[in-house]
Length: 279
Ligand code: C2E
Ligand code: MG
Ligand code: MG
Ligand code: MG
Image (cartoon, rainbow, N blue to C red; front, side):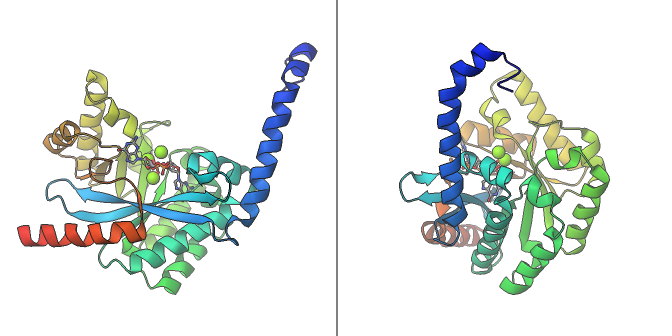
């Protein structure tokens, strides 16, 4: 790309590119050891049933506890992990760790994000089944979150994978709905259990357009018998609007930030007891 931009431009950007490349290489080098050195951690964020306030599940979100850089957020290393193929072993670690953890939290669903690279790997279904057997987590308590991009290129192959996962008893959620191509045909043709409305629409609920989009996605979800979850709920006003339009589940800082298992566990206990005694 630098060459196409013309010689002058290429020369001007070289030192910068060099630095970026070196940064990538060093991150990549460190990442190869992250699993072996036990540097990956999962934080869990509650999924809350809006009408009862009950926690029905958690989303597992990976972080990298880097010895020099501190806690690195997923957006800073997942793309590189995808480019290098390391996402396959990271993703498997995430699945196994999340399922092991969820098996300790009776009744809760655990949602795990799948990279498109994992989704396209030939042994995904076998890996998932193997981890479920190994951890003893009932398949219905695992929810796999995928984004629209995996459906884009070879939708026949994607459908086959989703159907095999469904046959294994796993739940499927469409993540970040509304940010990609958002073809309504996808919702019709693929066996989703849940639509997660992207947080950008929730943040922007005061704007008429976002408001209308959220309303219609919720009603679409209802008609298609899919659960709708709103991501990034931060205010009581947002939650109230979502309750009025009939959104089933919410997730966001209003309820809890993603937390390490040991910090979330006491909260979960309180929430479950709280809703049980209210019933
Ligand atoms: P996502 O799956 O859409 O996850 C939701 C993101 O929104 C999380 O960011 C979460 O911390 C953040 N969030 C939750 N509630 C709020 C809120 O009220 N306000 C705001 N501003 N943000 C909120 P996080 O943990 O940084 O993850 C970012 C993305 O990285 C995820 O988006 C997901 O696409 C990806 N990711 C995370 N863990 C994994 C993983 O294990 N595997 C793969 N392939 N991707 C992952
Ligand atoms: Mg997600
Ligand atoms: Mg999302
Ligand atoms: Mg996202």
